[in-house]
Length: 150
Ligand SMILES: [Zn+2]
Image (cartoon, rainbow, N blue to C red):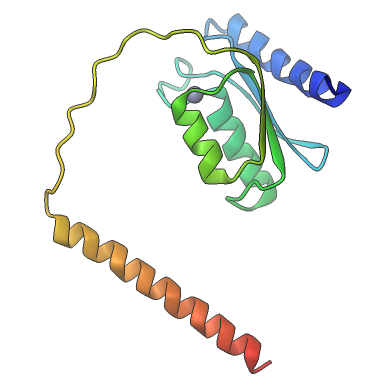
């Protein structure tokens, strides 16, 4: 195992200990970008009254703010526990290159499935997405034309 992974997992463990001290689920995470620690957090769902306040989520937000970008390419997330599906989704959205974790995820309490209902005002909702994509394409074309004309 690379020494660097042990070192950064040690930092994530420090965060997990803070969570334990605070009576939270003891999970910690850090984000490393080009050998720099740009995010570090512990589980804080009780302290923040926020069911999404998992250590990786908070560390990702910190890292994105530190880089001034929502893309965390070439970043590595170290988490003391294997990221849950929500955090894994956020890692994918952020384009994080690599995840290193300590312990496997433990089975969590069974939760009731969310009641899901679709197709309520679908045309209006879809129209906004289409307008957004159109504007985005126009901006890209303008940028390309500016580049071509020097
Ligand atoms: Zn999570």
